Length: 573
Image (cartoon, rainbow, N blue to C red):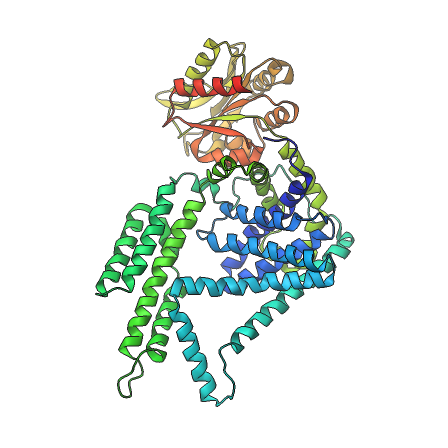
């Protein structure tokens, strides 16, 4: 990783990271209030306020659009199954604010126009999404409803554009209001110093981040192609004859999703508002579209059009949900790096490691009752967060991770890796944790200095119940002291590789080897090999800011391949 990431990217990382963190924290709270349409506008207003207020402190040209890209990329951490729309929305909002400031300057006009246009983009995005989901027939339905309304009241003007203009004007005014708040905070934030206390070492075990769960799923570019082709083919069949082809295509596609990735369907199936909307849409098309027989309220032709639009909507929503899941692929950044976007991927690795701590530090839920005060506190902490980002940016240690499920043989593989590396005359320091087995059960662990071979008791089980609970282990000072000595600066100074077995729940709470790992990061650039339980890899890497990592899942890697890869990388460096 490049240690000298340009300062503007580091500052953009702070703004974009705080913007993304507020989206996750406040978004979860607003989602629980069941006001999705209003929630999206509130989150956009928060973003506008943060961008404009922070621009009063850091006025570097281009910092706003960079912050937008970073915040959009952070949506990959969001627990939400749908991320395509938010990514497009956030990116465009930042570019609109940046464009307005570039044209009109860093003044009241530039900020007001930028905030107004950014908020209006929400409406533009919703209209575009509706057209994609329901097709051009939606325009005919809208026109018919508006004409009927204006005709009923005998209004002399054409009403097609009037509701749209009124809606855009309301959104623009709301965006201007957010801009005013941003300007106020940017100028007056010094009055509320130290509203938020940063705790960059807080445990991230219970953070509302989806990356860890996503990482357990398989991703594939082939799946992306499959979903795109399936949606295209299915949409063609919806409007084909006979009509049953479209229904068959829908059930076939939904069936494939159900049996392969059924978690995608759950948010759709259990969302009553979505189904009620489809029913209302179908009824409206039956009333306002198609030829009616005699005095019938609903025409058969219009009803069929409504059913076709509803089927199209189902295809698009299911397909977009599937595509959003594939975009959660943690390897996308690696692909971007191979395309030459090294600076962006490097800064995103920093942001991914700092974002959990930002989420932990931000006020939660009802603490946002005074949003001006909260946002003022956030702006006043920009320089402190910049220091945190710079600290994480310096963490260039290569981290090799030996990963596997509980009781999958990680210790056995590690022993073979140690022997293989030593046979290659690699100088190794660190600790291993041989298990104590009694009556077929693990009752404790030793800690062993790999360099000297010295071994002593590290911990033992306190109780027979809940065997997976870490609180049931009693740790001994002699074992902890031996481990810390084996990882001390004097012991590891001549090592080619430092091994730590293992890094897990205790370290995520700041216990056991957590402080020692921090010291190694801060004082050395030596590569490390960690043993980490499979489900904790993302959390551990985020907690310690381990950005340059290589994961060896023992389900797919054997001892020889791991030794070969480590030797190859160390020789190259």
